[in-house]
Image (tube, rainbow, N blue to C red; front, side, top):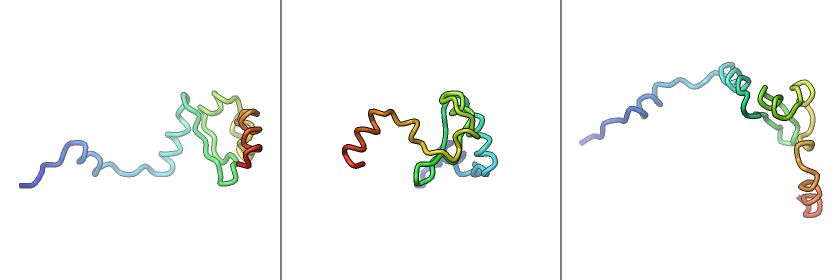
Length: 84
């Protein structure tokens, strides 16, 4: 006897993946959460409107800068002592 698919399974299979444009619009529209991306070296490469509202930096002020300003000084001191 075969199992009947659940409604959620059918919906998931039919949903098309988001295009890059749609994903960007979705992320940029989020205001209640700061969403940003860092490159492997820790530099900010994307910054949404929520991050601007929460952190106070406009995208053109922070993109390209290192994320270090967001790490509390106490945490930075602890990491440098431990060699991390």
